[in-house]
Amino acid sequence: MEKPVRQLSGSKISEFERLYENEQELHFKYITQFHVQKCKEDCSKEDCLNLHNNQSYRRIPVLLSENNWNYMPKMCKNIPQNYPNSTTHSSPDKTLGKNTEDKSKGQGVCRMGDRCKYAHTKEECSYHPLMYKVNECKYSSLEKNKCSKWGYHCSFAHSNADKRIKGIQIKHFDLNTYRTKQCSITNCKVNECFGFHINKERRRDPSIYTYKCIPCNFTYINGKFENPEMCPNKDNCSLAHTKNEIYYHIEKYQNFECKNFPCYQNHCAFLHRDNQNSVSKEEHKNIVKDQQVTEENVKIERIEKVEKVEKKESNQAIEETDVKSESKTGILQEDKEDKNSIPQKLRCKTCLKRQIKWILECGSIICDECLEAVCLKCRKSHARRIDLN
Image 1 (tube, rainbow, N blue to C red):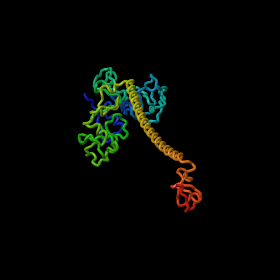
Image 2: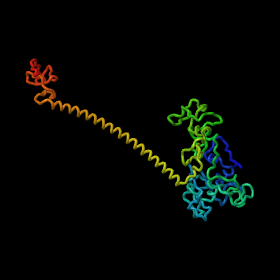
Image 3: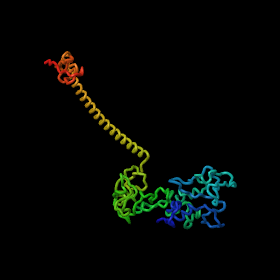
Image 4: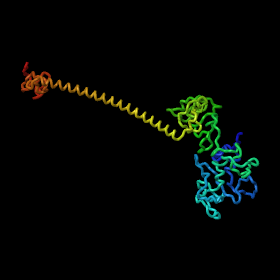
């Protein structure tokens, strides 16, 4: 039997209504309206949700962020167990934050008031989304929505259709409508929201538009998806504009195995092995350690390869320097041999390498190569010179 879901009216939906849009009508009333406002009339109705005499005021539970509520369904330590009607909440007619303590209650007053993160009454625990209709009732029901013990205000479930899951009620996943409609809340805090919040998350409705699971060149730039509006064809383009249009395409959805182990994504687009997510903490630690060891081994191999290349380059550089030094030493040795072969008295006085051949008028003794028009010693031109050969 399917559970009846309440339908929201109006084009603009508030964040509060969006939070409880999947709740049944009766459940929504008890979570958001039970003992929140005073009853204007002195009614004696058994199913009245308003606040009457000798009853404690109840705060409305609000989800501030993921898994963070304005108060949790756990009794505050400042409230004694034998003090069920103690409260410091401001009257429903007054503004929140300006709390006035009820002096007639005496002890058991919490100074935090409405800012306290814990429940101050049993009703705040029982009708909290984390507790309300989550467990089954031990007592039978006299008629529809009426418990034999607690009457119309029973906070336990009396049937499968009346039972809730813990926390915010979630829609069933539908591949055809996933991320095709924009979320109505600007700062959405629902963990498993099926709407898109930015253009990069949007999927075109596959029942209206036909496109392939191939990235469009106008939106897929340098390995990343940019704004889909950059494509000149807009929604009429035959290629994918976002990552979700590829992953959740009919041809690709759950056709490839997921690389994450374990996978923590709620609606993963990849295929998972049996009992993939049922991994103990120790096994998960061992898997992480193995991955770290493999990564370290890869790093060590890379470092060794780099060191080998550097060694080769250094050896080549050393060999080149040795060849150059050998060539230089060879030239020097040749020069030495030349010098040693010629006696010092017969060497040219200018270059000190070759054997003398000419004697000039100034008395300088030079070889053929050092013989020039002007003497290097006296800076004069000598017409007379003696050939020693």
